[in-house]
Image (cartoon, rainbow, N blue to C red; front, side, top):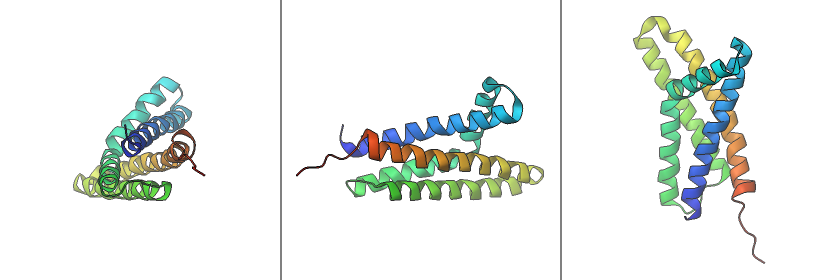
Length: 137
């Protein structure tokens, strides 16, 4: 497998896993048990960060096809764009459904912050440690 697809797959997979861990620990802290926290964390991530994850993956694939390599900064910039697009989507949907808007926005912010922290950790780990570029003399 060439480096770009491997990097994208590892970035996305590790970010999702770390996001789930962050959200599960946060929800367990708020609610009590880790099992319930994991279920609630998964619900938050996949229901209130789904658009952001999709935008992030699409941007990564488009720019990987256009350029040979994506750096840490561009990958994290695309994650921030995805989180912002997700928040705007949740705001619009929340306003259409009227009564649930503040709660939906809170869920989206929670999931977005966990996603961005996880992306910063996972992308740095993947780019600097796991798939470190080989230095040739």
